[in-house]
Amino acid sequence: MRIYLKVKITSLAEEAKIIRRYKRRLRAKPRAPGESPPAAWWGLRHHHLSIVRPEARAALIAYGFLRGRRYRQIEAKCHEPPDWKRVGQIVEKFGGCRHDPTLAEWAKAE
Image (cartoon, rainbow, N blue to C red):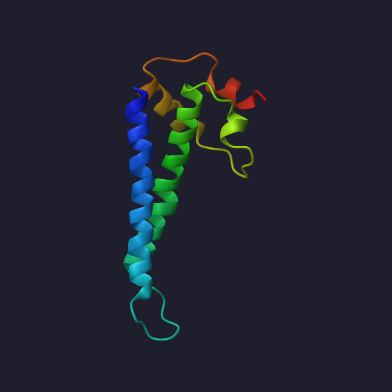
């Protein structure tokens, strides 16, 4: 099942690249001085920051958990805690069963 999680991670990375490419194209179009980028640019930015990035982070943390990595190996330094509920959902979906230790114990372990 982990191969499907790897495909998900890869597709999220590609989606982020595609969004950045289209944002760059929209940003490069000529505009009047002081005019903000078009609404599509803001929509792509919101999608990238609010949907794609947190999902990719949760998927990468779940993948590390399933592979037996320590949390600090995956995220050595972070300023905001991940969405543990989403990480747990991904682990259950792609892990095939509940894992021991639980995510909460795993995240606190050094």
